Length: 96
Image (tube, rainbow, N blue to C red):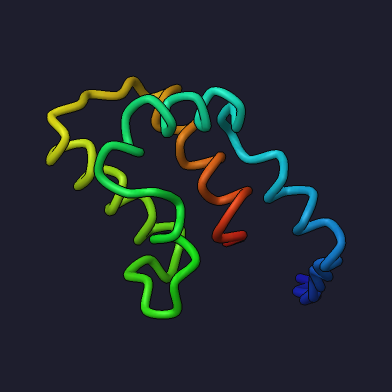
């Protein structure tokens, strides 16, 4: 029996990762509208740009958004949550 082994190499083009991040699910414009209507009462956007910010990854951002929604007694749909995440990530964090 012929048992040849083949190697597969995957090369990731850094330019494509930006496209993938930009095409993440969610509507950034809807996220901004939701942020302005529901989040500005507690804090403005300076919390996202300070040097000692708590959020250091996309997973942290998801957890923080859930925590803020809980504290504000807000329930966002899955599409609203995706919009908020996309807006915050596109505008402030730029996680991949």
